Image 1 (cartoon, each protein chain N blue to C red):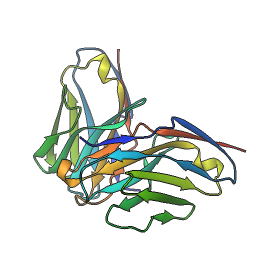
Image 2 (image 1 turned 90 degrees about the vertical axis):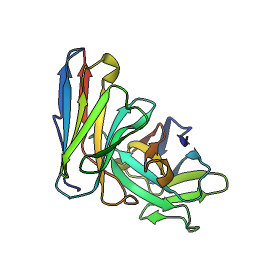
Image 3 (image 1 turned 90 degrees about the horizontal axis):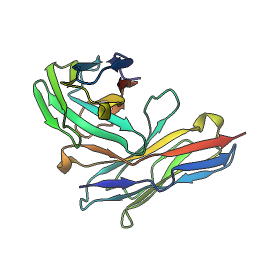
Image 4 (image 1 turned 120 degrees about the vertical axis):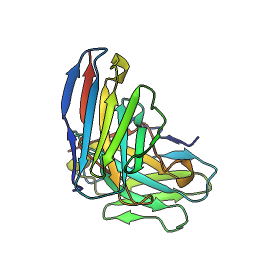
Length: 112
Length: 115
């Protein structure tokens, strides 16, 4: 299995609070991604990174920001959590732009 | 924008039988990859099989094979000799490098395997 660790595994937070999810990889892969999974939608891309300090938006980026200060860490921040951001969040990595994506085990976030 | 459609929300199969999961996609590109991912109850996303669009030969991985019809933009997954451990959500996904290297997923098909 690819060395990807997501933390926390579960989180419950209140509306309006900031939340940061962490993705840590030990594979030294260049590309990292954040997806959210909701029933009926499969997985949708939030943001991705193609190198340290190089990030770009995905299809559902509103309300989210990311940072990548080191190759191994990719952080996803919800500045002010809303109930619509209740979801399962997956981090993924790939070595090259044409390599398969390998996923972490996900973080279940509940915003009450 | 690319879209991926899985028209079967749920499927069931008898153990040891064969089942085919459907996937269609929409794209104007000629160079792309297609994937099937499996998600068991553990929530882990597991790559099952992938197909390069420029290859005419259908990909095969043990009991899993695909039927790739490029002109029809169809990419179905066939599971032979179904096992109880095959029960999971299955997601079809499309990837193209002109679209920001995004992996676009279908809505998923839940496969149940009956003993």
